[in-house]
Length: 161
Image 1 (cartoon, one colour):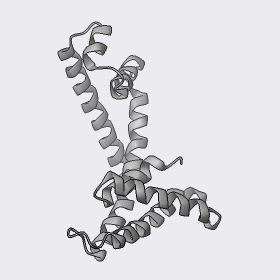
Image 2 (spheres, rainbow, N blue to C red):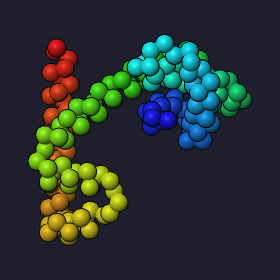
Image 3 (cartoon, rainbow, N blue to C red):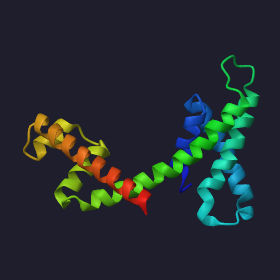
Image 4 (cartoon, rainbow, N blue to C red):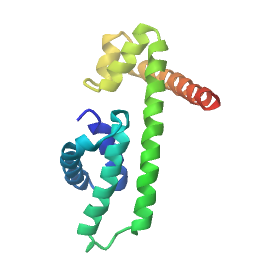
C-alpha cells in the first residue's frame, strides 16, 4: 500500500505493541480494499483509511477488553482524532524537509541521505570521505540544525499565508 508507512505510524500511536499494529493493519487493509469503491475523493485516501483504522482500533481494543490496562473509549477516540491531525502535520513537515534538502549543495544532500540510509557505519563513511568520525558527527549536527531551521521557517511562513 502506498500509504502503508503513514497508516502504520498512526496505528502505532494508538496501539501498545507492534503485534497489535500488525493485526489491525491487516484488518484495515482488507476493509479498505473491500470498500475502496465507496471512496468519493481519492485525494482523501489517507484520511479515509485513518477513519477505518480508528474504528478497527476500537474493535481490537474491545476484543482485548479483558486486559487490565485499558483506556476509556472516549479517550481512545480523542487520541485517534489527534492522531489524524498529527499525521497531516507530519506530512506537511516532510514536504518542507524534502524542499529544504533540495536547497542543500549536492554533496551535502548526498551525505545526509547516505548517513540516514544507515547502510554503513558513520566511521566507515567518515573514512571514505576523508574525515574523522568526530568531524563527520559535527558536520551532521550542523546540517541537521540547518534543516530543522529551514523546516521551522517554512512551517511559520506557511502558517502566515
